[in-house]
Length: 93
Figure 1 (cartoon, rainbow, N blue to C red):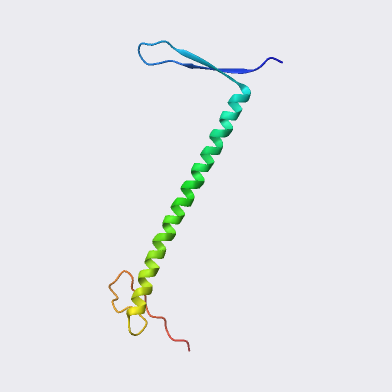
Figure 2 (cartoon, rainbow, N blue to C red):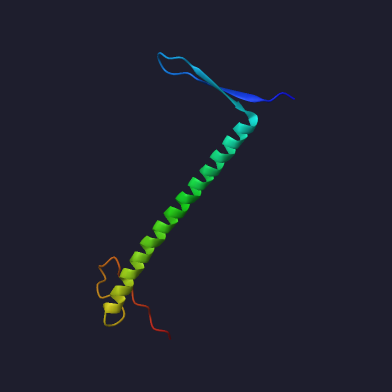
């Protein structure tokens, strides 16, 4: 069986000569595989980065609330207008 090849023709805008590149079927498959792996890796990296950023934001908010609760005398936040205010929990009956 003859070696199958792909021919890619590059045509520039305006003046200039066009160029053609021949790629074997095996080379094309390798190129597509590498691009697929890079694409999946980029999506995974983006997902991990975004979820870590969300978790770090949540951690900062919880640390601020913990500090407010530690400083308040009764164990509840003293300023109900604060965005970090936590309503007191009712006592167990």
